[in-house]
Picture 1 (spheres, rainbow, N blue to C red):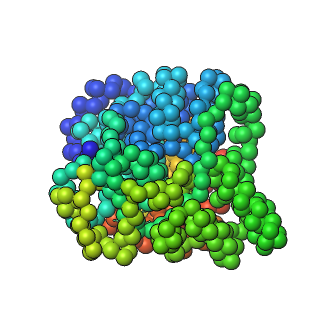
Picture 2: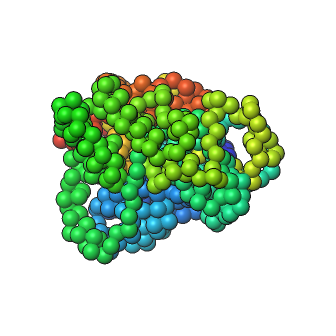
Picture 3: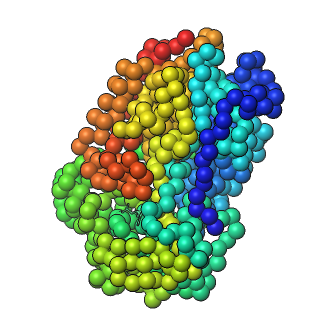
Amino acid sequence: MSHSANHVVPERGAVIAASRAAYGPGADAALDCDAVIIGAGVSGLYQLYRLRELGLKVRVFEAGSGVGGTWYWNRYPGARFDSESWTYGYSFSQELLEEWDWQEHFAAQPETERYLNYVADRFDLRRDIQFNSRVSAAHYREETRSWDVFLEDGRCCSTRFLITAVGVLSAATMPRIPGIEAFQGQSCHTHYWPKQPVDFTGKRVAVIGTGATGVQTITEVAKTAGHLTVFQRTPQWCAPLHNARITREEMRRIRANYPEIFARCQETFGCFIHATDPRGTFEVTPEEREAFWEKLYSEPGFGIWMGNFRDILTDRAANRLISDFLARKIRQRVKDPAIAEKLIPKNHGFGTRRVPLESGYYEVYNQPNVRLVDINETPIERIVPTGIKTSAAVYEFDIIIYATGFDAITGAFDRIDIRGADGVSLKQKWQNGPQTFLGILVDGFPNLMMVMGPHAGLGNFPRAAEYSADWVTRLVRFARERGLTRIAATAQGAAAWTEHVIAASEGLLFTEVDSWMTGINRNVEGKQVRRIMRYSGGHPKFRERCEAVVDGGYRELSLA
Ligand code: NA7
């Protein structure tokens, strides 16, 4: 088990010549590739498929040894979808929809990884993917209107277009606790979980972190661990997942309904199957409200978050009521009232952070082999060779699991030395928050396109990623058909989109709360100030804006 990755920026010069020989000439004779895609996860695989259709010479660089991105790395115990599997799969291929049977309504990581491998094989994608290839730098060259892309191991190649498909939660972060390296047992960040299974039987296990990942991990590890200690800084408002297996008959019906399922996902705010209820919280009687919330609590998936009354995420009083409802559920499910109180969030309302979906999470704290340590009361002072020392005690462990999250959204970009025209670094440019055009282009960084970049809409990831990759594909086709070799956002375009993104988040309660969704990561320098990281106007509006740019002939862009 290991928990970190090093990022080395290689020397320029010599490696370029070497790589030219290695990759051979591209369609543009002077360049190795027409397009380089960073990442072979959900969006990178699809982007490759689409660009290949245009006849481009494409190369994907993937840091892992297999496809899947999020679903390749996050193999921690309990890792699974919170989106319905049948809304998460790709929608672009009728054959694929016919061939693939989902086993569970909310698939676990192994099933999703299998699915993405199936897709890679089905569409013969692997021949353009170079695994074990972490991109460390990418520099734009004005003379050739191209990018030099450098890998950590010293290889490099040149490309007209650079497309990032690096995910939004892929730069894992360890806590800044002294002594981590001194621990003598096994330890691992959930993101870097080993491929071989870890046996918890009889082991003393610690989990630090109670986000969506921690909640899944804790629930699973508690089943077999000799003893489990959870170190909690901020409790979450969790709601039941209600997963179930998919019968053959159900799968038949799902398959028959795919057109309606995908059409509905296109209409909803977050591309989930759950649509916001048009009623306001106070427009119904208290009895109706309670009955509605009971119904949502008993149903699978994100309905209680995404299909709730229209004002629970904007109206303080409405948000307080739904939070009270969830607090009552926690008190009912956790036997020890003192522990229940510790598990009830006090500093944020329901849904203002990403809601973890759970399968028996609260009942874990009724087990005799599980202990909850509130580190606000007794802070962790350091990791010691035998375990964890808080201000109150030393706890001994065989295994420490760090479920401490990610440098979200911009973190994966920050870890690559991306330099645009004039040598400006993207990290520097985004120091005070991302600035993009449609979450896809960045002014000053010609021919760079981001699939699911900052300031794009988040939500049911593949639904949004398919749209984003299609938009990129259309722009590349437009450029090639017209012999354009330089595509760039303008400063005015980026400023206007950035302003719109900020305006769209006004009045949303989540903006007042620290979380990865507001760009906070206390383990990363410079990420302590809340910023608007994603577009909160909803996907239908996002697509409307993007389509208007296409319909207008891309006149907001600078094309040459
Ligand atoms: P999250 O949601 O960012 O959760 C990280 C958790 O780790 C959270 O409970 C943090 O507490 C905790 N944390 C982080 N650093 C520390 C330190 N130094 N000490 C103690 N506790 C710490 O990441 P996840 O991986 O769970 O989920 C990310 C997304 O992946 C999720 O939303 C899904 O979309 C999939 P805090 O809340 O900051 O007090």
